[in-house]
Length: 237
Image (cartoon, rainbow, N blue to C red; front, side):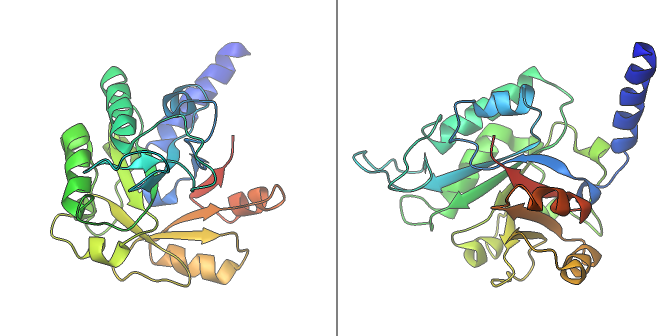
């Protein structure tokens, strides 16, 4: 019986690798920095395949760090298990080097607007410095999303707030940009939304090969979102 279960798990895993990225449902962490569990343990112990970080250009009672971002929720909620964006990237990069052949990891980024000390170039430099060829970027999307087997060892970063239009029209776009239902960003192929059970709207998004992320769900909405085939359902640990 144990052998049968093991074979079944391996078979399902192999079959999953043949599915395009935009057809997969990923276990997704919400506000991944605001728990007692490190972002690496979220991936390795709790099997999350996507995390979320909130990036800020300043932090109360702390000096501004040029070319880097603080990680926390908001001014009245500074709890975070990791201090800066550069620290988070180093941890993820170290994890990747130690776990060759790992499945694709998606990182959603809720960010402040870019400024002189925190520019698009500064943001891109941090990504390229830590991941280089491991980044799966918008330019690598052709007519359709690749299958999971072709995204081994890759990282996908998605901006969900901030200067989204400015970033998506920049010359060197290393991260994806997510629209919202009331804020459509031309060229965006991710959609970031609160829960909706509007089947026609979801069907329309999927027909456009959009990747859907839902957040702020209550317990009753989570199974509904799964049934609707939402790719990323942001869950609190």
